[in-house]
Length: 219
Image (cartoon, rainbow, N blue to C red):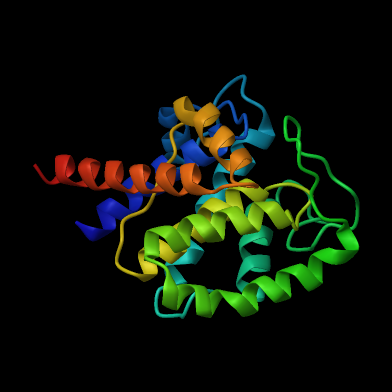
């Protein structure tokens, strides 16, 4: 049953996380790509590669269950697994160029500052873990990571994987953000630059919804 649940959430998380970033595969098509190894006619090759790469990164976070949070190398590995089929030169490497987030009023840090910011953030995480509820910590990890924006692309997907790693390390279920809530998700994250209350609440609600989904599956 645990194996089936892991497979069930692999498809759901891969589909939803990619769809939030404009991947065109439906949930059913994602399932066909991941479980049957088939391509979907008329869909871009990149969309297929994103699904396969995200699935591999999803499996990787389950290898870190016994660890205490995660390391910088874990983050780089996650990104490399997800992104190597898209752009091998950028996969698993911090960006070395300026990037912009469309629709956001807040600039991301300059690329030379990324290694220092990542090191500082990772150093502070153990203390945050002592103070915060795991669901709040997962939201905090997600927010802090995307605000640093260490990679050229794929930051949102890595942030959601890291947030879920925090949750499953502490015995919680995965959090899945459906594409239909994309606007609410992005708006709460944008407001989190000033006040992260709405974003914390948004993540907590998604965790509760996953719990309800889990109970429905058991019935």
